[in-house]
Amino acid sequence: MERIALEATAAIDKTERLTVIKQPFPEARHEVTFERQVYERLGAHPRIARYIRPLSHTFEMEYYQLGCIDQARHKIESKIPYLKWAEQIAEGLVFVHSKGVVHCDLRSPNILVTDTLDVVLADFASSSMDGVRVSNVYNKTRYRPPSFDEYKYESYQYTIQDDIFAFGSVIYSLVTAEDPYKERTDDEVIKLYTAGTFPDTSGWTIGAVTTKCWRGEYSDAAEVLEDIR
Image (cartoon, rainbow, N blue to C red):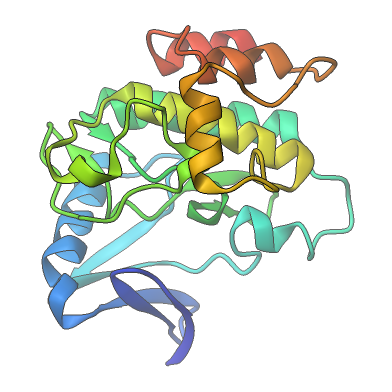
């Protein structure tokens, strides 16, 4: 096997069968076992990374040679189909939420690109299922709503609104290839978000959708998907 990546909870090894196996760090076995349970609940879906089978303390998944969105950007020759990908990510969120799962760490590194240039959601180790969450890993500042307090993260109750807010930042990164407020410090970003000040997306095809995600103007991901379409 070939080690191809390191995540917060596990090393990722590629097999000769062109699949990947998560090798959990000893202190993170519980998180990887939980992630396996999430994939088993979600089952097969065109917007979810393909789960193959359970293994002791871990699981096997399909290998996506283009990698995540950030990696695929440098591998494909055509222009990034950000409208198509935004719609597909929203489709994934609608499905995930319908299964009682909140991703909790939605951002470009956790969205994989298929050989057909479609996208799938992946890396559910930090997710919440039926309100239960076992990971202490939380999303990056620019992908978190201002209501999130990193000093009280253990008691923070994740909801679908957290994913919808993060999705606004994902759209921003799709269009610009940068995180929102890249030049600002985390503390400055928190102050801006708390004041309701977000990057300008006017003039974008789905700029209004992006801003509405940040402002909490959607009740669920289905409304987001409807606006994108």
